[in-house]
Length: 93
Image (tube, rainbow, N blue to C red; front, side):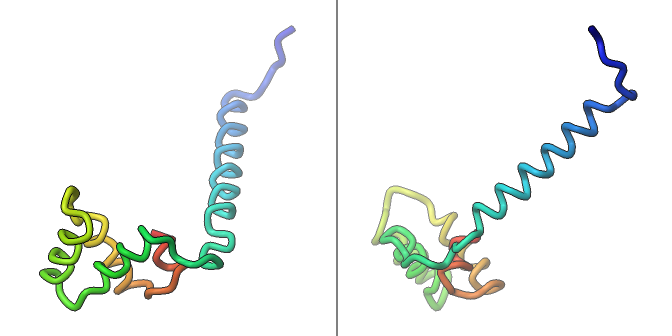
């Protein structure tokens, strides 16, 4: 038996379910974000991103992990200038 739904009814329910999933995912992602200490990888990224200049950042990152580009550390540097250097701020990126 086929139900008579208003046109676009499934789209409305899908949009509501999508919004609920986004809100729930955000709550779970950011809940107690800064409660644990930084891991070694996070600490090394923070150390490079907190360097006094971009040149120093690139030098530190090359010493720590010469096999990858410093894209994350450069992005983290900008993020830390906007949001601070707390564990929660660093992990929020």
